[in-house]
Length: 335
Image 1: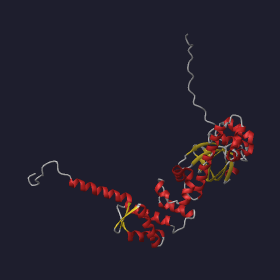
Image 2: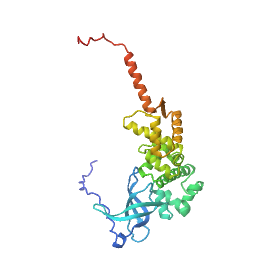
Image 3: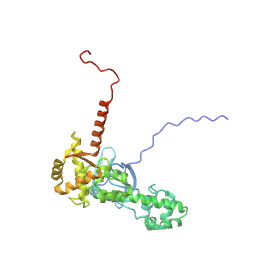
Image 4: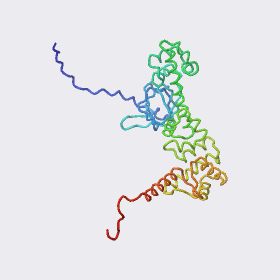
């Protein structure tokens, strides 16, 4: 059967949505805006840089574009932003923030958007409507503390209910970790790397020994870990700080081409850098040697990796010297 020919329609690019009207002169004087996150236009999880469309809580009815950095942000959340209005040459008026504060939604519409955003596995738009219609303002409390009641909602059985509960715990863990780290001066990018390394255990690790970050997390050195440690109350002369400081000094010297440092020089430099007594530093040095992190040869202190490298190089050279030649000796003068 022949098919009737239909000419193709010329391509027409999709229309761009109309830009929101510019803020009034009075609005532009505002240094704080509040509202509900309608959508995330752009989000960089490494740096936390975010562009969000926000429906203001009061005043203008049109959404505004909020630009800033935040540890975590979800659609449907209630947001308070402090900053200033700026005019982007391409995208128009935006509210550029110095501080973004997000809290979980309380309104029914905010809860629906929040649950339907894809954040929580097992909940789509239809289920979000049913859950909020059934539990109202108690929705998030029920998910967190009485998740068995979710089975009262049509379409949710035991398996889906468990998936929802597990996903909620995971997302709350991410948020708690990010907020904790940022409250102690950790940048958003660093906080994301710390969470990827330790997961929900990140808060416990940082509270117990923040100097582990130097060894475990790329991009965090001794100075960053030390600043975090002092903010969360680790004593200035703690053994953890002394041990981490010794490793940092040896690594700094290794970057300058030195494979070891004498114990006397190491202790004196550490005392000057850390402001810790030589007695505490000597105990820390002994502990690092006993743990294998550092190696002592007479009065020389090596980082373990460099000592191992030197040992392997010496063994290879010795083996090469002991290997018989595969040809007759060469008479240098004759050659």
